[in-house]
Image 1 (tube, rainbow, N blue to C red):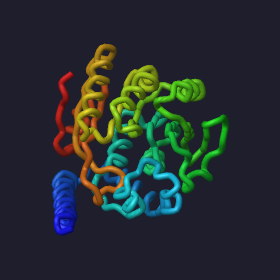
Image 2 (image 1 turned 180 degrees about the vertical axis):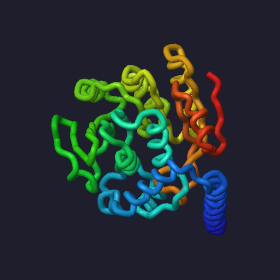
Image 3 (image 1 turned 135 degrees about the vertical axis):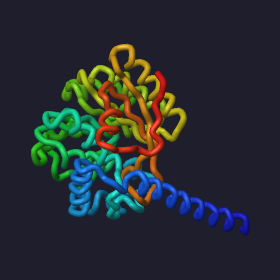
Length: 290
């Protein structure tokens, strides 16, 4: 009993100190904001303030949408103005393409990131692929077109939601049949397993990339996921010149309520040059040799 209590308080203290550390890193790196990036951050925070609820407790009890308990506890809370990947992604897209973007997000969960990207694009096609149903907070925005395929015209963009499993070949074939596009930007945040990432790449991503592309990976803190993305980058380097793969740390959905995650970008665009030109530094950024 005493050991359990000590262990409990130790873990609480560790989490508290960990959060202080990562919020300090965020302050050091992101206090001075790039003007273009600041506009995106303001737009996203305005969207979050208007759409206050992404999932309610009764819905979460029926289906957790792949969200851990500690994330659910903070998912509807307002976040500060420090950079999240939902801010960085539209900045990167706009740096190379202003409109007519084809964006694919695999693993959208409750659409919190997906809808923030939508806020910042114009005349574009955004495609969501997820094993879950559309969360109640956005279900009314979509209409069923085909089995497992939904569509919405939200503002200036066309949104598609495909309900499918990245490990199910029938689902993948159906997805490719209905949404046979070449994507400028792919966000991978579905199954956090080596098997899932490789399946996504081999069956969906590898043949669906535009001539210039960005593939964005979350949660590369796990060695098996980082190793899988290294293999993917190496495979792509055989067919694309000037390919680079780098990792860095950044906040996700719940911003300042959680430690930063290691994220990674594979691209044949000069992203590092763009970040340098715009004076944007990402925490612990590291080039991965291919």
